[in-house]
Image (cartoon, rainbow, N blue to C red; front, side, top):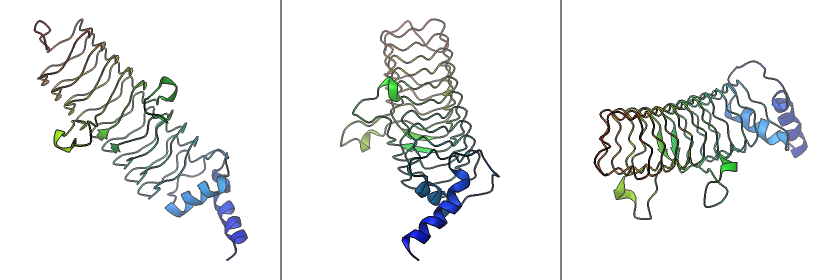
Length: 258
């Protein structure tokens, strides 16, 4: 089969999904999704509400794609570029997002329960900047396995219950890799029962945040806004609260230095 014939077939398969309204939500195979991307040629890809659960989409470039309501549950999105992608309300339950690109992606109200978020790309340079921040408003990240710099992200109301972000110091021979929430907006976020050892929350907004039963050993809250946060039952050994705002906090002894 010639290259021309292969291209015609790919375009025929992909045509309904490029810059178009959503169609039926039947399951798309890995081959169909890759055909859509191959035929896009810079056009906006629309896979809104499509079922791609369990697919191996390793390395795909979904920059700017419309993925609202799409189902990626149990899929392999290792190294996938989601720059400027709209994943509002998407399902990413138990999805592997290792080395995925999250720059300016919108995960509002998405379900990432149990997903793997290891060494995700959140910046094109060495440091995160506000213009590259992602959105996770009301997203469910409970039970995730996370090593990720969320700095400057809008994460109001996000759910991190029982998420595992604790740094394993024995694995740090090449330097300290840790999850960071520097300058994030986490007002109303839920971290109940989460592992947050060595995590950084410097200058983050955490008003009314729930840390009940969380592991906060060696956690950095320098300059954080923690008004009305709940630390009931949390382990705070060696946690740092220097210059943090602690008005109305519960379950934390603010009288003694930490």
